[in-house]
Length: 551
Image 1 (cartoon, helix red, strand yellow):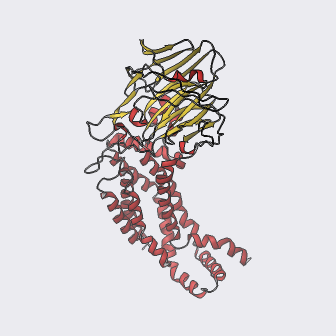
Image 2 (spheres, helix red, strand yellow):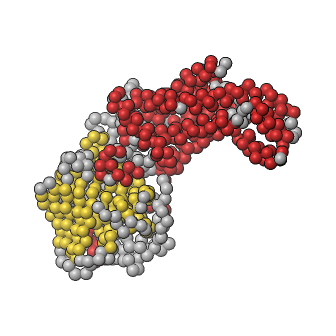
Image 3 (cartoon, helix red, strand yellow):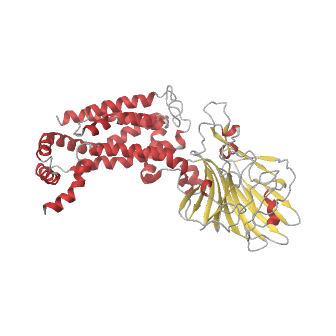
């Protein structure tokens, strides 16, 4: 029975004895933050399995240019339909998130600004606008069709007429009649938009309702802001019960004459475009039959995400809601409950939601998000103190056993099997369970990760001031004061924490952990660094108390 026990316990002892567990947790934390920041944030998960080729594609065109359509039978671009330049005329409307503009040409909206949010911290800075978010000065949202005969339909100029509580746009020619009915108001956080197309003779097979993404290689003035990077800009589609983020670099075509498209099978609930803090979404009343992603022929940063609707008669009617606003939980739920998936809390959403609610509850009383972060941190430290207590008790116990364990290592230095057996027997006789000592630390990790995601993704911290030099908790500390303080506090915390590390390489690695954390925090939001700073300070207080307790 000795050999099976040795095999069964060897890895357990090797992984969690001494300070190896703390080292593993620290490295895991660094990996998690780096992975989120430098891999997940820029890339995000790919859309679900899909097929490429033979799919229909909506035309990629801009106002005043030739419209292009893809023949669904051949996959070849149809001959462009010449269109004369259009002088778009826009009408101002009022919404619950801010003033918007609706144009008389192909785009549903030619502008939309958010009253409560600015592109920079200065009071004179322009408000966050749809054009800056999408780098599309010409507007956003369009209706197009698959047949070459209707390739021009997403770039026509009609007439706009005011109605009670809304407006109606109409265009008509010998082939079709298009209508857009808008309904809006200051008490609504979205715009009701009903799209209608009537075909007089031949009809297309499919209709596409699309949102466009344009990269920032050639940014407009509206996109030049520290709050908006290409990594933050994403197109989205909600299918089934999952949200997929589309990356056009992943859409390839082996045939240069075929449109680089990706079919997204399955009912599509809505499409959207997002940054870290803001969302533009088109939500149909009934799900579309499927989705479609199309990349520009010339620029892999540009593309469209589309809802696809089969056309079975001479008329198609598509009622939708359109939202542009902050990714704030209550606002999103007021429009469509599943929009809250755009707030990326990662794997620990079930923990992140309560943390966010508690932080908002605290802020309602104190009126400062920085103070709210401090109080929330202290509350979490208080709640997790029993786990910390158990962990510290275990560490103190193993520290006292260290001389005997070192003696066993010396005695069995040439017999690893014998050393493992003796170590396990020794720990059992002393009543020490290494798993019990490490478990409290592991139980705290999901709380930290969830809090990290809350502080990184929450619109509540957007341009929220703290005090002194920290004017905005959603961007890095401009003077790097908090990261430097963090290194100092973590170094001091390490000095007063009992160490059971016997491996010199391990001990050396642990000495550099505070510096690693400080470097990681240099470019992360000040709100997150503030949490780490307060957490380190509270941990020092706890550690000094526990040191006296177990002396």
